[in-house]
Amino acid sequence: MKTRRIRQDGKTVAEVGLGCWSFGGAYGPTSEAEAHETLTAARDMGVDFLDTADVYGMGVSETIIGTYLKDRPGHFTIATKGGIDRDPETGKRGFNNTKDYLRSSLDASLTRLGLDHVELYYIHRRDPRIEIEEVMETLLAFKAEGKIGGIGFSEIAPASLRRAAAIGPVDAVQSEYSLWTRQPELGLIQTCAELGVTFVPFSPVGRGMFTSTAPDPARFGKGDFRIPNPRFQEPNLGHNLIKVSAFRQLAQELGTTPAALAIAWCLAQGAQLVPIPGTRKADHLADCVAGSAFAMTDDILRAIDHVLPVGWAHGERYSSDQRIGVEGYC
Image (tube, rainbow, N blue to C red; front, side, top):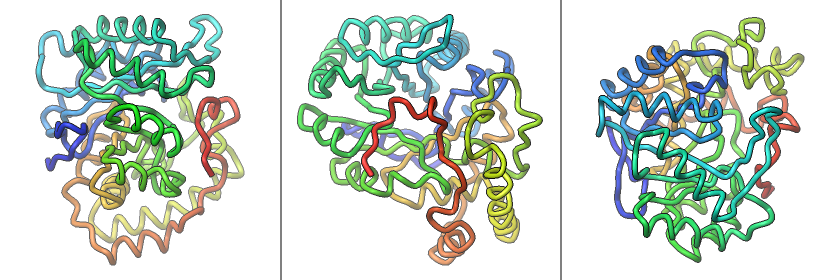
């Protein structure tokens, strides 16, 4: 697979990574065995970049990756995240970017992963009590200690990115970005390009919307993130499925799958993008990885824009609870 830069120092990874939120049950129950099968498939397909976080299953995702790496070291570049303080009993989210909290979170992540160093460490959500300049100083200290290789932020505004970059090199920013979530085009992707920051789109296949099988809420497992999500609730879901059916037809006419076409579209939005589709199933990952080999053209991009024009989606991308902590900028 082709590679793209993930850090300012020139470190590269395969241009399609793997988001590991689903290993922690975000889209219903899974097992360590299933996740390990997917990791093996990822390795065999040339996917070498894994994205996880300490709150994915309250450490479950990191633990699963750690048990896999124990007997198979050296295959993957690992990114993880900290800064969300979730009550293990109630599940209520808070945010803590203090130096002591981030240090303890990072150390716990490293223990679960079985590593003494991660290649990229993100602040998962900003803590409004702590100025981003102070957070950068904390992260730069972790980098100097050899605990992290690069610095990232998740779901921040372009203005915040500029403030952080004035203190030291920011290597990556991740935000939701796909054919139905295009807010990053209103400044964030451009700012990343200007500052040499890699932009990492998560959910580039729309949480399963841009796949060969239409999502059915009746089949969602317990704890599935999509259950309270406005885009997967009626009447929004019905409208969205009608629009996406035309996209599925286009993919079929082009001899590819909807997931591969969605990934290819994402890759075509800029050389600094490294999408991380999330799945716990090897066959779904194969569909996504196929997007790297798809021969995108300007004519195909125009055809995609015709069936899914900017702003076509019905419903907010997050519920009011899911939206907490995301920085607005438009």
